[in-house]
Amino acid sequence: MALVLGLDTSNYTTSCALYDSDTNTVIQRKQLLPVKEGECGIRQSDAVFHHTKQLPVLIEDLFSGVNNKKIDAVCASLTPRRQEGSYMPCFTVGFGVARCIASSMDIPLYDVSHQQGHIAAALYSSEKLNYINNPFLAFHVSGGTTEAIYVTPSEDDVISCEIVGKTLDLNAGQLIDRIGVMMGLQFPCGKELEKLALQYNGKIKVKPVLKGNDCCLSGFENKLSTLYRETGDKALVAATTLAYVETTISAMTEELLVSLGDVPVVYAGGVMSNAIIKNKLCSKFNAEFAQPEFSCDNAVGVAVLGAVKLTGLYF
Image: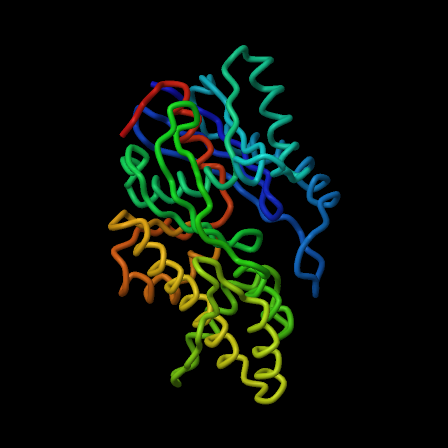
């Protein structure tokens, strides 16, 4: 048995999780970072400050309901991606706490990327952790990332992530939040935008803009702004926004499956928790999705990967 603590301090969420490899169960605690009303994001200096305040409280709460508080290892997200030059100050908070815990308890310390954690969380929640043994296509779609990733097994790092498609400008989550804030919604705007979109019953025609396997989203932001200005119809604008994101991800998936072959597809990241987008993509592809609580930023996948590194356990 291994009990592994996972920590993730992303640009929008403070999170911690305990993964029990014996029972394949997790418990987690997470809290959004506060964003000022009317703004679409948070400065890194503010993110670091809020993580520093929130993480100790969340860890205390996490362990308050655990009888055996002896953990066997700790794993933290250190970078946004597993590539040279990938860095965000906010991740230093979680990794710094992980170092302190590992040193004081004399237990192993591991690090992964935030992206690897997202993918592992999606696999865990969809009961497809066995995917780590073979290549598959994953999408990481959020406010900070819109990327298609070819995932392969890695002897040293459990999974290796190669970016095979990406946005060339705006991220999908940024588009959703910018349009939502424009209409007076509370950031992050995904849930409220989805509620509005469900109120619209008309037909919507959108055409994605792709350049090879990559996509462009920023141009459509102007069209949505004009649509809202001309109609004032929040439900129409919300439905059109989500339709454009869905058709873009769908088109990227189709293009990539042509080149990669018949590999499994996994969708992860906060945007993929949207039920409208999920239902549309499920009707087109035999794909796996993270459950909503594991789609948004969380430390579950980080803890799971830490357990694999510690025990050599494969599923």
